[in-house]
Length: 325
Image (cartoon, rainbow, N blue to C red; front, side, top):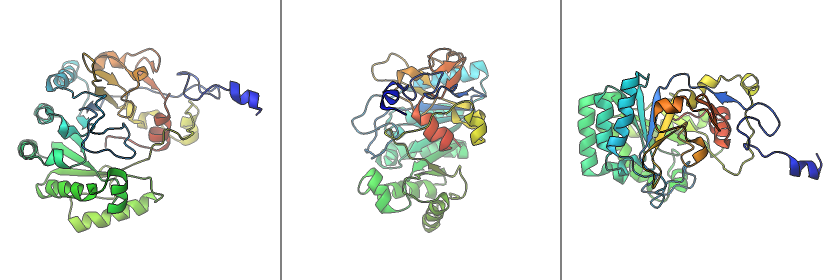
């Protein structure tokens, strides 16, 4: 290809309907809404080197969502008879949100499962939070699951990602959860050149040593996430890719989940297709779940999500990542 042709070639992920190569962009219809994610806010007690949404003690681009705002979506689920079975809470660090225990109570009291993604560090280990979690576990058992981010099974590589001392603090939190018989899962990363088999074997050794109730061979009990690189040259996904890759659009997480965020300064929360796209206004689907299911503009085709972002290709389709079990 000549230099002139390269300069005039369409940019990747620029057109919601057509890829740079001219193929029809892949879409993922909503098969059934099974998991609703609630972003509790983007503030976190630590700054990780490669956080998917750049959470930190300073990043408040996503405001703390309030208990009443989250409850409005739970009311909608009940009113519309939506097939949601699980509410996931992510951040930032969810236990920094002052309403997190109340939101968990509202979810569990309705008979839904609750999943909290946490680093299990100081925000979770405050006495008020510990006491609240124990009360919820006593009342609702294993319908409450805490998935702890343990990026690697070694102190050196985990601390390389999350900061010196974070490994030991996270192990303290996991030890407490295990000791108190919580439903527990772990989330690691696959960014150190290991095979999945090697990674699971390493986690299995640590799990056995600490006597945690986690099965390292179970993909829901130990979730291994692909690494993301915003600067990488990522291939686009066309409709033909489903056949080429031997994948079904129904297996991609936006076929069964949506996410609620409240941006800083916004009057109300908004619905997005996925946990990886919290800041891009092009992916706003509507103010409620019914409106989101009918979104028909820009990145959406009657509720179907057009895979017009590098994360759609790298994390979900090619990486096989899914935030929910």
